[in-house]
Image 1 (cartoon, rainbow, N blue to C red):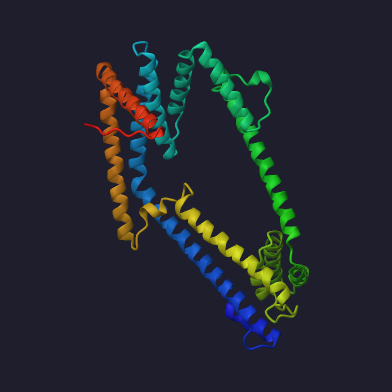
Image 2 (image 1 turned 30 degrees about the vertical axis):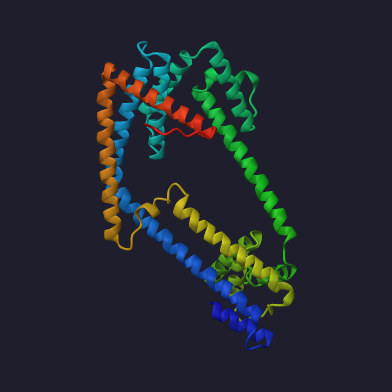
Length: 369
């Protein structure tokens, strides 16, 4: 397609070789390759996802249920009067770590939620008057950071676990997010209008006339024109000059609108195409490494399906081992005497870590003998 475009533009320019057109053609070629690679990447991610789900869903479910039972036991221990305040603080730390693990697996259940509600109730019961005031103040500050509008009476720390308040909080968060998104869209729209290339605005208008659905000779042609018009409108709204060029080639292959690359518009076209390249490269990177539902690609990707399966089997063994370790921890926690010894070891280790951090912050380093 890029060769076609290059030939058309060079014919219009009357030159056998035009550096401006060559540069644009190379950019278009790179974008085409990046887009093709991105499609291939997503297909591979889909294949890997299906294999991972097929082979590990039951193993992950077993692990999550094992952790859930462990959390419920920890919360039960947390509510017992036989544990000192420092012990309960240590237990709370373990509970939060285990909850974070379940969150990483996106595990939810009514049983788990009921246990969490009970944990929050226990925490509030164990708070001193000063701690409650501090928590209430932190709670208000959190609402302020979210810029959420609540009545003063609603900002009660004791309501944090109330289902009605949770629903109200979620609704306000969604409304605030929509408000921010609308502002961002308006800002981007204004920015695009400011940077609009006049020559390409004319091209868009000419293409819109050619692609208008009313100019059809058959029902099949009408459907094609409607689809082209939708893509054209989207490309213009987003100032996607790459898509606009591709649509021009599709809608007007004979160049009846006489698109010509000039010194005036070439610089802006190159800038827009460079931006498109950066966007695709950034999106590819995010999909590989940062998106929660696709970043596993790097963990399981291999040249062949056999290699992928080998990595999945290794992952399954890790899940099984974690289940076994959690079950063993469960047994230790059931025995209050053993659990207290473990809590003391954790507490002393944390104290030592805090002291080491303190020394490090002051640039002190003592050799251990």
